[in-house]
Amino acid sequence: MGAQKGKDLLLKMSDGDGFMTVAGLRSRNIAFNAEIVDITNADSVDRWRELLEGAGVKRASISGRGLFKDAASDALMREAFFEGTIKSCQVVVPDFGTVEGPFQISSLQFAGDHNGEVTFDVSLESAGSLAFTAA
Image (cartoon, rainbow, N blue to C red; front, side, top):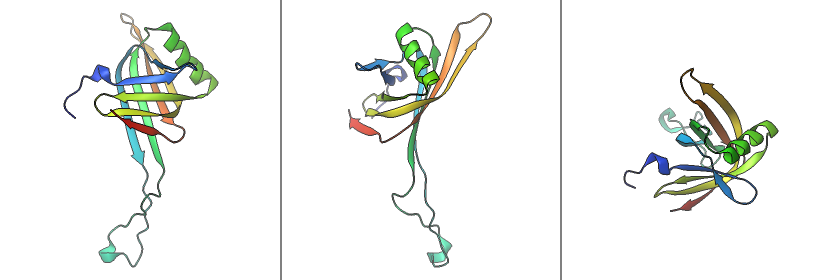
């Protein structure tokens, strides 16, 4: 995968009829994590750490920062946060693929400077199994 434009990394959230792109995002990030299970014991060769394959919990985190631009996607995020609902989301990574699955908004923050626009920060955490479709 060669260099890609950051604006092509998209966060989409289900609105019940399909997926709506979360508008106004200036930066987006997705991180995958897998916990490890350490099974090192007195018989481990030269006391090297040993791990149990496939035993840890996997999770994904999505974050974004932007400005309000689209009333429909703003309302969708606001409602999902205040109702505590788990929404199906997609993250489209150009020339890589699409990650799709259930996510819950874990943080929604607003900020504004006296001489600037109001911005928001949003964080989502995976809430179930994720699927990956290669580009």
